[in-house]
Length: 277
Image (cartoon, rainbow, N blue to C red; front, side, top):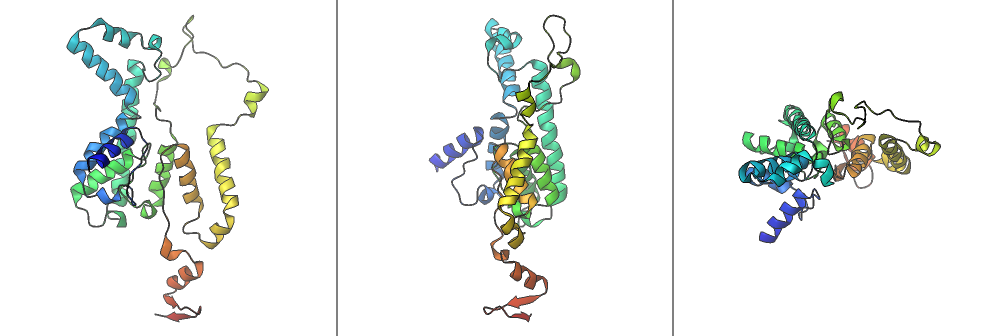
């Protein structure tokens, strides 16, 4: 038990998402205490790491009154640690991260409150589990719900959040990088031929999704429940964002003939004859 606890904490903080169970974190969706412990590990290990790092240094400066901490806060660029950001950037990063979490949390609760994913859970368990799920949608990818039954609208929202880099922030124009000599915004020069050939990250993701659709076109035709554009998009973006969300497989509905028979309210016998229920 101790080994499992240490393993889970370290994996969550490092955003690895390794959970030594067959069902990820779904076996713990009715354990709010454990989820409350893991939620800070997710955000502190990724999105809010620079914000809390600067906050920790500020607290140490106030407590110890040492000049070294004040120097670190004022000369963060000279330190050469890329996670040490300016005070403004760190604050805006925190506001942005909590804004995304709040938006996802409200929409997730409104969309999935009475869904199959939350069957058997009380109100408090639903709230904590929903918060844990949306916090994990940008990074660690630990899931307490069966994502295959989550609504397509929410999965598309997860796709957007998984695509965003961890240090995404709504930075006002006056805080953007400026030229050190005249204080004006730097202008982009002409791109070289090689730079013009380089596509954006979104372009590569679209190309990857198209290639997967081409290679799996037969399965998309035979098993549209498990192989469709939404599932492929989620898998591709999840891999790119290092999240690791998986939609799973709907095993009992793999065969298209069986799905069609079930839709008509008929039973499919061993010899292929369909009989009304």
